[in-house]
Image (cartoon, rainbow, N blue to C red; front, side):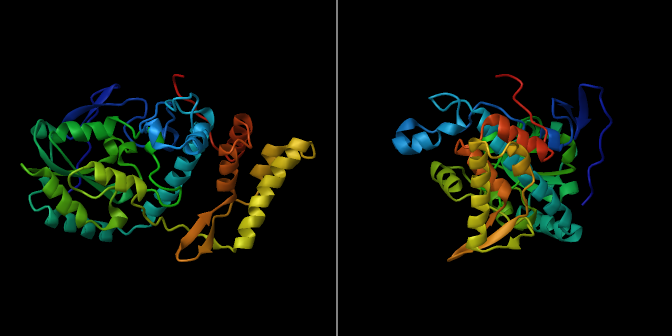
Length: 336
């Protein structure tokens, strides 16, 4: 299947891609780690207060800077972006390990299942057209299957919008599926689309046929119902990232927890003068601990330190200092 040739630039503010003008925006035309999971205080999923007990509501309070739980706290911005960036690194390493020929075979299978899907040369021809579509990201050996009442508009939304900050992760650091809305316009190298009065049906067949190694869909294709959304939130789709985790025992896990807890206690008592340095010098190896009747628990001391920060055992300044010592650039929202 022929890859789409990049169109010439239309200037500094916009460029042509698949026949339409795309603004660069702050994040640019291709995905970069610096702008991945860019922090925002607004909360996408504001669940009603009555769905929580007082204990549950208070347990979530650390994530917000207001009593209504409508704006993310400084600590949540740090913890969530750290987790998202670690997932980014694992995902890109995983993508690089995938076989290009296997990817093409998987894409051919999706095309066969969505029999009416055809290559798109210009999105102008798909303005106002209802149907299903497949976006292909050859550099990452991934694709995404979607449907819309206006295919051109929907694909341009993917290119210009970012995933809400509190929804970048859909699961854990180690199994969250990469968010398609963090990829930018020029990351999309091929598009296939089908004009149909039954977009959800074509999407459902195509997505169901997809090899999960190569597919960025976080939910099954088909009609999005309240029940489907509830199930997706309760049991998110996940994927293996080829994480090379060292085996660990429950005793070793408990010892690592104590190592973090003791360092924090020593800093509070004055016995430790450089908590940031002590935390950053710890072994950050990823481990796998067996669990009865379940998949192994994947963990690292970085997870334990982030959990301590969420529990209020570390200040924002200390956790930010730890992340800086680990080589991360601390980014705050453009507007508070």
